[in-house]
Length: 138
Image (cartoon, rainbow, N blue to C red):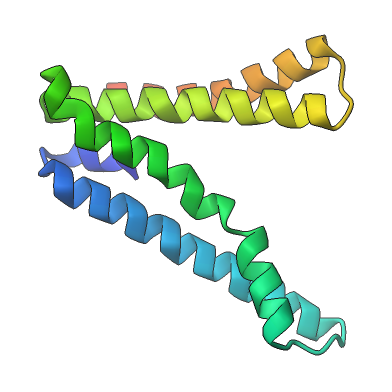
C-alpha cells in the first residue's frame, strides 16, 4: 500500500497513514473471517471465544502497520517530503520483515545461518516491491 500510494501521487501523509491502517484492519478482518469460516467447514462450532482467539491470532497484521505509519507521521520532523516519507516507511517495512523472519526462525530452533537466510529471503520480497516502486519513477 505504501509503495502504491507513493508511486501514484503525492498524498498527504495523514491520508497515507489512514489508508495504511484501514487496509491493515480490512486484511485483519478478512483473515479472521477466513479462519472462522475454516473452523465451520470442518464442523467446529464458532462461538465468542473462537472469534476472540482468531482476532488475537491475526492481530499481527494490524500491528505490522503501526511502525510504518509512525515513520510517515515523524517524517516531516526529519525534513522528508512525501517521496522521502514513502522511502522511510518502506525501509521500516524491510527492517520489520527481516527482523520477524530472523527472530521467528531462531525461535523455531533454526541455526543462525538459517535464520539469516530466512531474513534475507523476506528482505528480498520487500526489495521486489521497492524495485517496482523505483521502476514507476518514485
